[in-house]
Length: 259
Image (cartoon, rainbow, N blue to C red; front, top):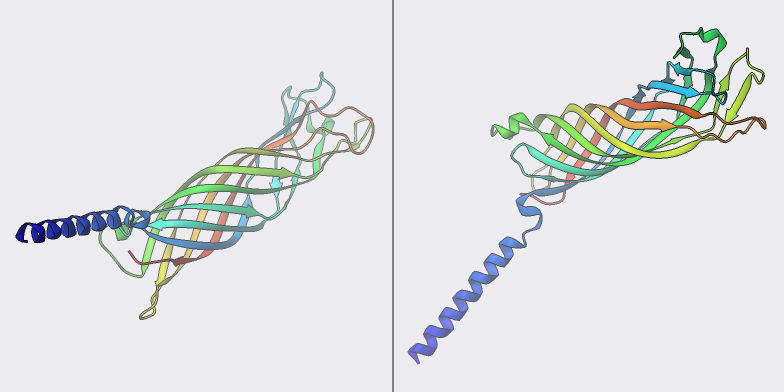
């Protein structure tokens, strides 16, 4: 009877140990607190490196000063907060459609811009996915205050969607020509800084407000080569530029459970 009691006690103890270990291993997110975040902001485009190659193979590469209109920016993200100054997010983002122009800034053979085209009309919008890492230096030092400044870096991919684009060259046989748009996916990255503020209500999860200023590089935006305005030849290289932007945003971060 004593042996049976001892065996039962050992089995019970072993079962409790296994259950506790399993519960610890299966604890979601390895001790991090998950959250969701919605973000809205304003994007100021910073296009650079604009160029094209006209249909005539004897013409030089023409460069453009690319400028775009300010547009909205939004994102939705799921994140993990380890409570030690580090948190990570995986988010989807999208921008409004920016109107783009590009006056000639030079030619590869040094010829005058007066003999070359300007980009008078184009548009681009961007959507993509990005993984971001946030670092809060005060929290990393043990400060648990409501106000927390942070730095953020992100890596991901962006789809740049350029609409129809028009070039105008008064000295050309066809002064105004319009070409099709196109989409392309490219590597994207971001870097920035901001701060968060936790609004705590007794007995409830905190609601965390964020604001940040970030620089985004969405990769290349490229137009299409299909001629829309006449039956002439399409460009050897369509209008292309580096699609970049500075984004000022405001976000609402909602924890899904406590650490």
